[in-house]
Length: 238
Image (cartoon, rainbow, N blue to C red; front, top):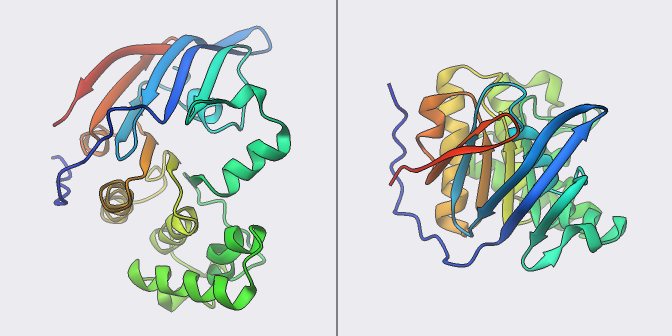
């Protein structure tokens, strides 16, 4: 059974926003990526699939600037991530990039509202304005009831929607989602995917999604299957 997402048709740009060019990465003597090349377009939902250890999460981390490739190049909007300093890459991750991880990675000492507002606070936005924007986004994602609670007091589905809100708060150009439904039941997982696809359709964000689930991958515009550290097949879903 496949998840059907009823949203307007995608409007994918003809020019890539993110490009991986012959990227290789090893951990010790173990290669994780072997000359992987990939293009990501604005407004596109791109699913990276494949077995564990195939390199899909490693490529996501290289595309987002979390990891530096050993060989090859990653460019964002025509700029080489490898030529940027740490401060510039950090600024990209705080503003132009949004992240959703399998277990949310919310700050346990902060309330859910404060977690969502955090990227804006780090960007210099005043607390009241940041928390007002965070509250509006939580309302849109229907999780206002956990705004004043800490992440440990929210359900798994609520916590992951809070994580999506945090990823969206800066209106990022790229959202990186690494197994965002892996710890959720099908109902909550479906809600999270609908939110991510809506971000691409309504905001023009690119979404790079790592998943093991076939029905989740089917919601993407393209599916790239990884094998032994490189894309093996690419399929358009629409």
